Length: 225
Image 1 (tube, rainbow, N blue to C red):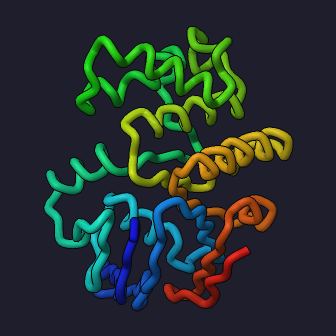
Image 2 (image 1 turned 180 degrees about the vertical axis):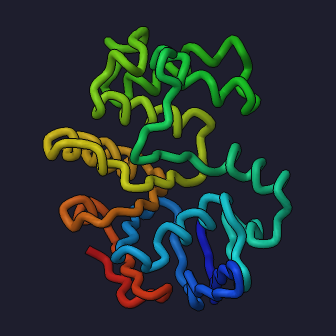
């Protein structure tokens, strides 16, 4: 299994107020799956995404990624897992604004161990994959929202991650652009990429092959499409 969680629990304690964000969450994601995680505000889906992305650690329970126990790693180990195993796609794109699409995709390769002579060709190939072969020298500020998200997807693939984690990837896009981005995710999944996506939109979740719904920190449904 690519992802395994068992009794995953996350409790926040601030100023004596105890909040249970995740309450015994257990599920598995196999290599090549496309899973949407849904739930209302406060359901725990963002907390779950942070733990799956090695941005946070659980209070209790287990999280294994590619057979590695992530939930007990220290900060340096978590950073290494984020760099090597996880490709992130965020709602706000998180691109460098005055930097070209090409350089935005090359950047993670620079600290990810990709040989310098290979970086440019690999980045060009990824931008072609997402339909931006004619925009490689455009800066982020010269691109539409949909084009910026395409760059972000190409960047997420730069280090050949085990999984792609997409957090509301169409949240800032119009419907037509949203459909185009989800078409790219669908194609990537067909090519064998494992994708876990958080969304609150049923029209976006329908592109996934499986939907997990959280409520009050627990899984209430887990259904294949």
